[in-house]
Image (cartoon, rainbow, N blue to C red):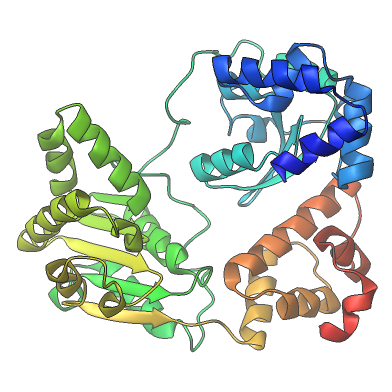
Length: 399
């Protein structure tokens, strides 16, 4: 997509080959996004660029001069990041963050924001001048210093918990009942028979929800248990940094001092022998101290064949629970529960439930529809859902 957009921009005479080469050189020197570099050298007219995104790429747009921006959304992204990448958050609803940016097709920036903030990103196009003015108004007086990570709240040495991911709002059905009951049990108290708790299943079925639910339960109930919820990818990156900076003992001590370790997506340990070795020692030390360990993966321990055998045997030594895809009725129940106070007609519930293949897709579709309906000031309808999700009337027979 990124390459195609610039080829098309040149074909339409929006930018010249010479301007594109100058922007590429600036990008290499400063590490900024290509569209920003093109604006910096004066190669792009903002009105033409804006029209190009809307007419040729079907980007949704927001007129920031007519929109009251949600300051709670602004606080999600720090000032330095907004100014550097010309981004302004406009609305925050549950786990969706709507932002205006110069190029809503820039998948790299969208992925970075989503990973660091733990929000699903709903991008819109807005004019450069409007974004500039919004940043100056809503980030006035805020620091401009750069930071390695966005500010986070909460879990010791890990990543933020998603507060909406609790046991209370988890919809229990036959495909996840066993995993749910085990997760609730280890949240309440240590159980040697359930250590480690290993939950596996396809993407988007609620594994991350259950790990967050354990963390939120511990956080919100009396007790002195310390915990860390983190992603395996982050664990790996932290370990590599600790080794490069000769801080390995500090890393080991930090992870070895907790009462509960919640590690998401352990399949990311595959191919990293040094990391596997280090994690094995931390794992054994925590087990020896009777500390609870909760793990998730996209496959059962015996299918993690690329991991060292003594590690997979540890994963299988407690209790292993599979999560399977919810049925149609369960998906409808999930939608109704997650909609909360939002009025969701039955035909919209049925439409989304039949289109979504897993829970993650289900919730993503729900939030896109409800968030966009709020922008328009409209009720949620089936025709609006089709429009927002890009599904036309010709597909009706398929749903």
